[in-house]
Image (tube, rainbow, N blue to C red):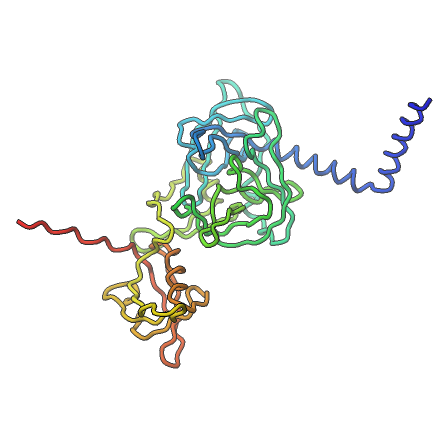
Length: 371
C-alpha cells in the first residue's frame, strides 16, 4: 500500500513539475535534439602522435554527404591515412586532400569500402560562411572529442559558453607563432584541451559558426586561449614580390572539395618575439620609462623608406599608444616580416603617420677567412 502511494506521489510530482515548469522539460528536450543532430555531423580522428604532450586524436566536421571533413591542421595529420570513427560507429580511413597553413585548417576525404556509397549528415559550410558573424554575448555550444572520452558511436563532449570577444589571434605553440593570424571567436568555455581541435562551434540552434582551434598560449599574457576560427575567416598573406594575396575559409572549402585549390606555400615558422626588421634605432633606455625617441634610422631600411628621422617621437603603433622604448620593442617583436605597420610620430608640433613594410631580419655577414 505504501509502495503504491509512493509511486502515485512520484507520478503526481512529475506532472506538477511539468505543469509548473514546462520550460525545463522542453528546454532539455530541445538541447538533446540539437546535441544529437550536431553529433551525427562530427567525426573522431586518430592519426600521428600519441607520445608525451602530443595527442594522437582530434575532431572533424563533416561538410558533405560523400565524406569531406574539415578539421584543424597539425601533427595529427602527419600520416597518409588517418583513421575516422563516424557517429554511427563505423570506422574507416580518410585521405588528406589539402592543407592550408595560413588558415591552420585541412580537408580530408573518407575512403569507404568499394561499393559502400556514403550518404552522411553534414554541415553546409559554404552556407554558414555567408551568414553574418556572431556577436560577443551570443550563447554557443562547443562539440569535440576532448580528452578522447568518446570512441566509435559514443557522443562528443559538448560545452555551453558565450562569445567573449571577436579579435585577432595572437597565439604561440612553444616558441613559434601560431600559423593563423586572423580574427577568431574568443569563448569562455574551456576548449583548449587535447582532442578538441577541429571540433564545431555552433549556436543554440546547432548551426555551424566556427572550427575549434588548436592548443595555443596567448603571446602577450602566456595564458591558454579558448578560440574558434569562423567560417567567414579571411587572411592577407604577403608574397615574395612584396604584394599580398587573400586566403578565405570559404574558398578553401569550395575549391578544396572540387580538387582545384592550391595552398599557399608554407612559410618558415617564425619565432615568437623575433619580429620583422624596421631599421629604427632608438635613444638609449637610460631610465625606467624612457620615451621612444628615434636616435638613428639605418640607410635603405623600412624606417628610412617610410621617411622617419632622428628626434621623431613614436606615439602610436597600429593605433596602440606607445609610452616607452620597451613598449615599442614589445609591440614590434610580435609583427612578422611582410606586415605593414602604421606608426604615428610627433615631429616638432606635427603628428605624422608613417607606414613601414617590415622585411626579414638581415643575416649577419659570414666571417672572412684569412688566406
